[in-house]
Length: 431
Image (cartoon, rainbow, N blue to C red; front, side, top):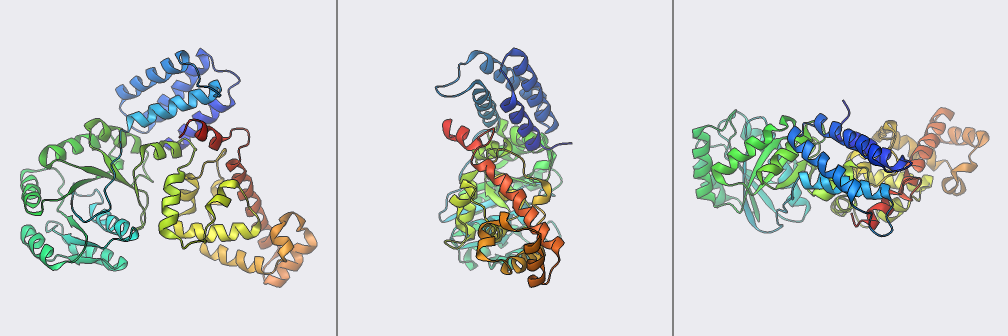
């Protein structure tokens, strides 16, 4: 089953390639949007409401000045999808106490460490208290995760309230994050424990962690936790690997609980602020430059990645290596490229660049002349043989590098426009 992003990007391409936008074309587009949302587990009634809104606006509204009918329809789809996932919430970068809650299996403990790492990357000093005495090994797991990133972690006692009280006295940090016990269901004893911890800690933020894979059930859980202690934000985990993320997002939005962060992978770096506009823009293939630049500022030393060069599509062999090396620090290449506005899909095998391959590519490029690095087109058979011999690799390895460069260069052309200039469209509609 295709994920929501690939399904919606197919819809955008269909609109872009449409010869004309008439009632029949709009009906086809609406059906494709319906199918994409239903496959992502979005509530049927909500999907029907959205479909009606897209159809009505597409047929009745006139395009804004300078926009074509195709661009107008894409803008309508974009705006309607942003509506269904509500508003995000910014957890401020200031001294504060955060209470983390959630059911067993939601990924809460790992998310606590991810959140600590998020504040750490922002230059703050987080500290963690493990008040989960219900799950065996919870403290050991959280302590190990915190040690990996150099964050203090307090816990190991039997009484949650005493742990928090003592932890507050012991730990020094400007952001105190408290992990609490989860259960298989929101039972009376769990609610009482959360309320007692809430009264003791007096947290600035009460964040609920939910597994996006549960789909629409996320809405019911968000409502229950909100009724119990009043939630200030939600973190949705596993948003990178579930086909039901759309259902979870829309269901949580319907409860009025704002989404603060998304878990986008397995490492402690894979937590990012939730921005509805950026998220939908990324799903539609329009990228999320705001998020990419924020990540780059956190992860890279000045001058390591020329973001403007990437966006302009400049791509010599020299640039390719520098950019891939820098992108490696930003996270998996696939996640990074999804944040870049492209007029086409990047082939799957373009993501399969391992560290070993990068090392081999560097050795090969060290055997090239400056002219060859700047103008790869001049590299013919005789040059390939010379480069292979000089680098101690094979001609197949050199051709693989050149093929990879060409594939990435073609992908980067999407940044400058092409048949469907995404960046131009985004600028036009201030997306």
